[in-house]
Image (cartoon, rainbow, N blue to C red):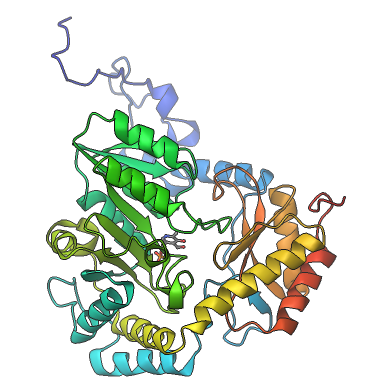
Length: 435
Ligand SMILES: Cc1ncc(COP(=O)(O)O)c(C=O)c1O
């Protein structure tokens, strides 16, 4: 047998009929000659492609998830939900603000229900451009590019700003959309230990690639701790690397007036710093954005696949984000109030003996003993009129299950006390330091 040419993949032996063809869908024989290793079918309808057989493994996988307490289900939210909401990402309490909903409605009435096409074809309206100009101005950067989601914005930044000659140094606790961006990029990826600028610096110093990008969440979505941006930025500068920061949980919350973590750390506007963000948290809308130097935005417009091959953000969402941004500029104290609510929640829960995180922004997490207990705790809270998030593996980087609480600028002190009392009353055994 001739050897393989260099670079050609190994030839896999074909599996026999018994391995591939099982049960009622495997006709034995059929009158034709059978060759070794060849699957024989009497007719096309008898092939093992009936959905029940093909997807049997999904039921087995669901059963395994169920046994591990990892079942996920959809629950539709009523329009007037009577529960106290500490589960949404509406940090500034703007989703239902009349100026935001009016801006969304007016945009839909004027520009239509959808954007009609890719941003490069028919999907850019004057409203998209207005939002981009105002977001760039607010964040202190040269240019902004709006996407249909924060997820697609992250895919775009990571895939278009890197190539096989780039090393991506990515924090181990980064959001799934950044991880997926790394997977799609054709660059080599180094997964740096969480919040460790020294390890980042060492990876940058040791690299063989001429280019490098340091990638981090600004505020980590599970525990709500902020990235050590000044040190990361210094490491990136020292080793001629770009810095890409996902400010999804920082925009509208951190920095003076909610300018975001880049502004708070004095990194915004730098020639080698790029931020991404979602419009679906503080800005009470939907969509995503990349913020940075003009040449970065131009490059994304011309090359980023998740921008080019995706329908532009719907006008209603653009209008809502613009309305929310103008409100935030007019009422910058909303950002400080969201942070204050988070600190109060965490302090009260810790004082009651629960294992709460120390929040840098508007996210507070509270440790649960395990995934089943976390689920049960969240369900008990809901029955008691409090909605909280529930994070379990695989959505948590360290395998530890938690409840996730989002502070909102519009929560009253009485609502904060009610939330704390409910969480403490329903806490499972071992969720507290005291027990
Ligand atoms: C840190 C972070 N980045 C990106 C995203 C994705 O944003 P979007 O929901 O707009 O796709 C999220 C959303 O949860 C997030 O938390």
